[in-house]
Image (cartoon, rainbow, N blue to C red; front, side):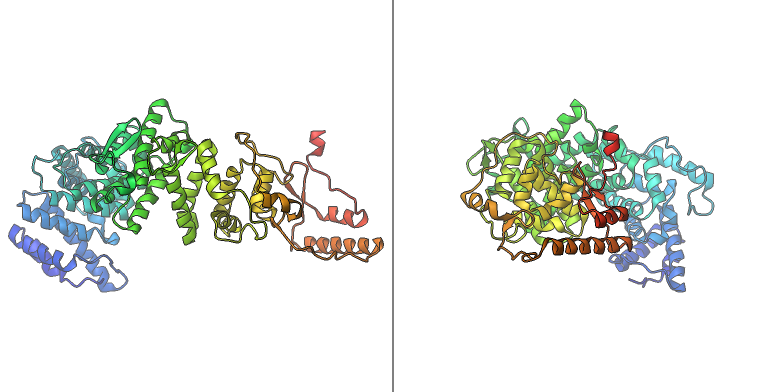
Length: 591
C-alpha cells in the first residue's frame, strides 16, 4: 500500500513541540495508516517519503522522552507501531536509547549495566546521538521499573508490538534486545501468570516477544532454558492458561471438570488457544536440542511434568477443526523434542470408561497421534513439514515402549490377509505408508520406512512380508540388510502370527512385489544352453557399455549386505568368465 499521507504537514505540526498539536497530527496519521502493512521504495518519491518517515520516528521518540499525557503517549506508540512495520525505515529505532524507551513503556525492566554488543555507534544512529544518547540510555534503564498497580495496558501493548516489529525485521535490533536483557524483564512478568491484573493482549504480546527472542537469538534461548528455568516457567504458564488441576501424579484434568471425559469437555476458548500456542512455540525453541543430549534427574522430572500437560493438550480441542489441528500440530512438534524416556507419560492415565485400552494401558493419546498422522498423510501437502513430526514421534515411541509398538502394529500392520493386491494399493493405513516409501523426498520415504520397520521389530523378513522387497530395498540397503537378518534393536520375542490366507499363498508370493502373481511363461523355454549363454553375455556387454558411458552404475550385493559398485573391469571379466565374482574390497583386511 502506497503512502497517502502528507508527511510534511505532519512533521510541521510535530516540530511545534506542543502536545495537543502533536496529538491531533498523530491521531490523523494512525487513522489513515492503521491498515498499511506493505511499503515500496522503488520510486524516487517513495524513497523521499521513507526519509520523512524516519524523521517522524525521531520526533515521536523525542516526545516519548518527555512527560506526556496518557492520550499523547498512546498516540505516539501507535504511530511507532505503524512506522516499525517498514523494514527500510528502522534507523531511528535500532539504537540502545530508542529500544530502552520502548522497553520502559512496555513495562519491561532492562539491564542496569548492559554489555555493549558493538564498540562503534549502531548503524542508523541519528546525527548528534553519540555519547549523549548513551547517557540518555543509561538514565532510561535506571528509570525502567515494574509497572504500577494500575498500568495503562494499551500503552504496554503498543510498545510491545513495536519491539516485536523491530526484532522481526532487523538483526541489529535483535542484538540490542539481547544486550538489554529484555528476556529477564519478560520472565519476571511471565511469573505473574496467576495475577489477573494483566489482560489477554499484554500476556499474548509478552509471549510473542519471548518467542521472537528465542527464535532469533540462540544465546537468549539458552539463557531462558538454563538461567531463567524456562521449562518450569513456561510449563506453569501453560498449566494456568489451560486451567488444569492434578488429580494424581502426572495426571491432569480441567479444574472443575475432573470427572468429565476429555471428549465431552467444552472447547478451549479462543484466548486460551492463542496463549497456549505461543507458549508451545517458545518451549519448542528452548527444547530444540534436548533429544540430542543427556538430561539430569531434575530436568527429567520437569520434562515428564511438561509431557503430562502436552498429553492434556492432545486430548483437548478448540472451537473449530482447523484451529484444533493447528493446536495439536504445535503440541506434536514439542513432544518430538522431549527426551524419549519421558514419553511414557502419554500412557500414564488410568483406563476409564470410553478410553482406548490395549494390554491394560490407556492408549487415548497414542491413538490421537495416529489419527493426527493419518489426517496429515491423507492431505498429502508438504509432507516433510506436516507429516514427519508426528511420524517420527510415533516411530520413537514405538521403538522405546513395547505397549505402544504393539498397539500401533495392531492398527497399522494387522495380520495379513490380502495377498492379491500389492502392498502400496488400497486405502488402509499400511497401503498409504508403503506408497510414500517411494516418495520423491528422501526424508519422507525414509521416515515412513523406518516407522514400518520398527513396527516389524526391525525384522527383515517381516518387513518384506508387509511391504514387498522392492519397496523395502532402500531402507535395507542403507542398513546393510539386503541379505536378510535383523537390525540391532532390542525387542520382545513374540511371534508374527500368520493368517490362513497368508499361509496358503505364501509359497506363491513374489517377494519383490509382495503379492501372488499369475505365472509368466519362461522366456528361455526351448533355448539350448549355448543360446542361453549367448543371451546372458549379450546382456553383460550391454551393461558394460552403459556403465562405461556413465548412463548407469551397476551394483552388486557384497557379503556384508551392502551394495558396492561393479567396475568396468569386473564387467569385462564377466564377459569372459560368467561365474566370475567381483572381489569384495574388504576381504583382504578380514582374512
